[in-house]
Image (cartoon, rainbow, N blue to C red):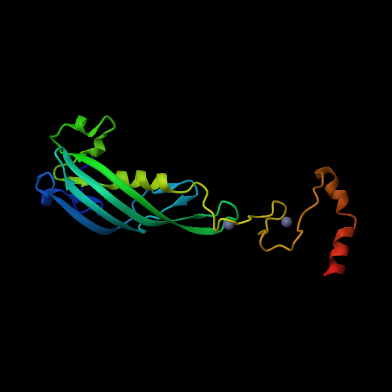
Length: 191
Ligand SMILES: [Zn+2]
Ligand SMILES: [Zn+2]
């Protein structure tokens, strides 16, 4: 297992709690986003500020960390491909068992990351899991974004009313191009 760097922004020192069940500390920190906060088209760029408001509480088996993390992910609108900023807020709730404690008391799901290493605990893996789950699969620039015209790729909120394309069989499209499109003449007269 890699050794924790006690100065890493997502590593917390449990010593001020003194292993006294019931003692707690509230910590607010702005930390730079670690790598890997990404899912599909959406990611939190490395270094983006993540606002942490957490509470470390000593319990019998270890240290319980609860709180919230807030940051902003960047992505592309799933319909028009415009860049979108996605606010992300996740709840954190993790029990870190003391190195010499009984991991079974933490429940059958406890993993190796759920242990304190020495006096320190690493919030990074849990922050990553929580943020990745919270990222939207298909963000939208706005709820009613109409997207792009499948015929020409223009934004559908910028094209003229009635905009459309005749569906022409590829085998005839070369021929069709030879004739003057009568529809197009009519449009010019109307406008
Ligand atoms: Zn859009
Ligand atoms: Zn079009």
